[in-house]
Structure formats: C-alpha cells, structure tokens
Length: 101
Image (cartoon, rainbow, N blue to C red; front, side, top):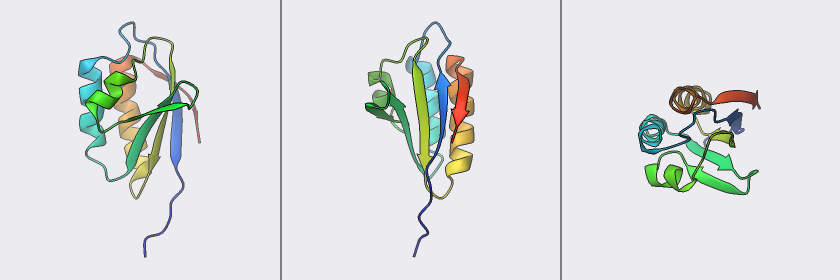
C-alpha cells in the first residue's frame, strides 16, 4: 500500500517581459515529464490550473509579466519535482519565489 503524501508548493511571480511563451513552456513540460509526481500550476488566484506536463495547457494559461502562480507537486518525488520545475520556471520566465508550503 502506498503512503499518502502531502502536496508541496511554491508561489512565484513572473518577471520576464515575454511571460510564459513556447520555449519556456516546452522546457517546463520537458522537466515535469521526468518526474512521477502530479505537477500543476495554479493561477488566477487558484481558480485555474495548468498541467505542467502539457505545453498546450501551459500556453493556454496565458501567463504574463507580473502574474502570480503556484507550482503544486504531489507524489513520491514531489520535493525534487518542485525544486527542478521551479528552477526551470524561474530561469525561463525570470520568476521570483514568494513563499513555499
């Protein structure tokens, strides 16, 4: 029987003038696919989510400079997934972390 894990998350604000476009979405998705955990981006104050494994889902979010997102990971490798996806997200969108839970 698998042990239920808590979700880990990190809130970030996009600072890049181009927001989340095709290249960053591709790199984020590529990174997310390396992990078994479910990885989501919450936006619009938590009212909407995007699957980090899907380039189209990320692009459909239409995230721009100044938008706040919450990276959420749940699964057996959630901490590693959060760290790696947040790193790529930050590199590609110039996002800065606000808080972690």
